[in-house]
Length: 357
Ligand SMILES: NC(=O)c1ccc[n+]([C@@H]2O[C@H](COP(=O)([O-])OP(=O)(O)OC[C@H]3O[C@@H](n4cnc5c(N)ncnc54)[C@H](OP(=O)(O)O)[C@@H]3O)[C@@H](O)[C@H]2O)c1
Image (cartoon, rainbow, N blue to C red; front, side, top):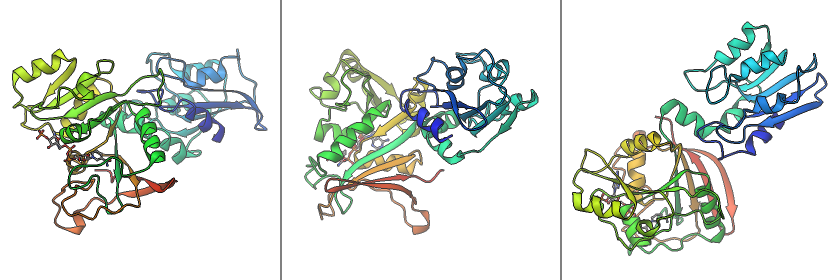
């Protein structure tokens, strides 16, 4: 199963909206007979790749697969049918498919046809490699990662708004890696004004660029910003119902798609629903503090990547990465769980998970 997980990870961030899946066929002694993984949406499933060289597999063959085989007709026929056709007698499954519409049905279909199925082998590892899929397939919302570069006292900018650069080069390179792992990147209006970020994945020479998103209730953003001028990339502005038709026209003329909430300020949940509708499964929020505060208040964030510098800004009027949450009791504050910590030059990168709502 470890080998199957390694195979699955070769396609990480390339299979959306599908999960990553690895499969290994062995004999009774653990000798690998063949293997495969799901490369991208529309391409053969891992089981199909692992079984393709066999008319029927040897009598003692065991198929290890990180995720429950599908039993429904999607873009490709059910893998359970193929497993039966190739006469696989033993299947070891890492974790059940979290999709409530199909969960457990693949395992049940195999068992009903006399296949010996063991489940839950390396279960948490098999589940964790598909965090993005697990979130969107159940909630129909994109997986949301919050990223911030902060001083040791949690500030994302000086009181003047100056913020470049709080962290070092290695942290910034890691930030670009995060961009390449998400389908869309978002910032609040004030960050666009202060920083004019390019919001591009500079590591990607020819691959896809993430969709760029700005939250600005009235759409009043600088028209000479990289966001407005970058016609190569899909750009979306989330606005409120107070945006003037003239402003919508000007933005559309620049190729910016404008989505308008029926509230005066677009809520994050509403925007995530719109993003999921257009096929976005993962979103990276790059600040600033006020936008991140909305994500936390609305309890829609999944993961935090905090780049922590040893610098101290030390000003109560400088913005902190969480903005103003307005929580009064300690019992009510969000309590994140630490996943791991990495040293990046002089900085630390903390990866944490938000509590599930
Ligand atoms: N160190 C870092 O990692 C980092 C990263 C990013 C930014 N920054 C710094 O952060 C500062 C800006 O942060 P900020 O907190 O002032 O502003 P921000 O979060 O960038 O933008 C806030 C603005 O976004 C608009 N908005 C629209 N919908 C929203 C919603 N649902 N929730 C929240 N805001 C919404 C609002 O303007 P409307 O009312 O007009 O809609 C709001 O005033 C800059 O100085 C920048 O340099 C630092």
